[in-house]
Length: 409
Image (cartoon, rainbow, N blue to C red):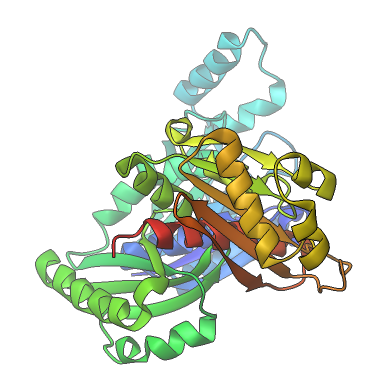
């Protein structure tokens, strides 16, 4: 089966809103064994929408659309589908009751314009949307399927996972499709590709390599008549990747690097403290994104000035001799954080986020320190000289260094 994805909204085609729905759905469809034939972003104009639906429907068995299901005059997804299929829209009494009930529960009268969210065509079934007021549409006609989902990602993803994906799984045939994503850090996309070259030659699984904010992801997709066979293909390919990438690998699938190190700290009954400069608190924020992180994270310091570093225990002579952006200062920061908060491990970042140089050192340079009772050490990082990228990559590098320290020998 082939699929097309249509992202609807002038806010997308003008660049005001980033379209995350299309990439999410494309990845999800590959897990079902559906080949994505095309992706399209379309403004809120009826002529553009009807053309997009007509084109997508002719090329694919399944058309997934997101957006344009709101109550305003520029929400035209339903109207476009109706026109393409030559059907009339009508108000469905049960949908109208449900919609009015939503507004009554909020203590509000329903605006007249919202009635369009209670419409259907004869070929459409309503798809529940407990996170919003706009139900989706599941439309089947002439052997083709059109699915219309809300644009807000939280509504769309819930509808996909609870309603749409289970229905499509039953239509996608009996082939087993398994996916494994191996995540690594410290290699460029080209370097990872060169090391993984033997796996590319396997054909099944198919290997894709992607640069992501937390490193390089290598995604394996195996297809077989039986799940057992697909699992064996994945296991063989993953073994080859692990042999090629070694300790650059930090996790798999839905794991995040902060959840991985959090699990390792918990398992080892260890505590962590941080001191960061150029990342401005992002390191501590990322660590505490993990539920339950209070069990191992003692706290952190954002020591943006040299004066604060010194007040927390960093020797002013070390700063004077080496500069604030240096390995010795990163090590002193990690040790000071550990000592100040009584933690088992201290982790630090100091660097030049940019756009200007600092101490004669270029934007994109960072030093990361780590300390425990046995002593301290540091590593040097060089990242693309864009302020946001420097901060994010330095945090990932720091957590990767922590993972390396916690990993069993």
